[in-house]
Image: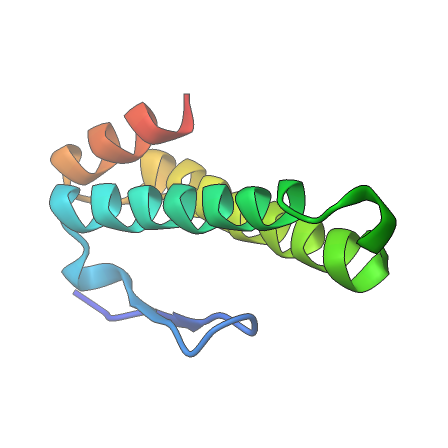
Length: 95
């Protein structure tokens, strides 16, 4: 089996598709959801008069990228990973 890795530009995160497991898919998706919730909490805690591009739009963009990347990875794995348990875990998290 060949190994394919992907390095994400937004983090120092390398994905080794050959070693993905159902557990690692769940952990990656849950981590993205936690990071996104944290960013949303950060945005909503900014008082109205202190809102700016840096305090609202930058973290909002980061939240969108974080969640979008996790969703796209799950959608890809749900379709093409050779391990059925990984496909199922990814499908559950992208539905």
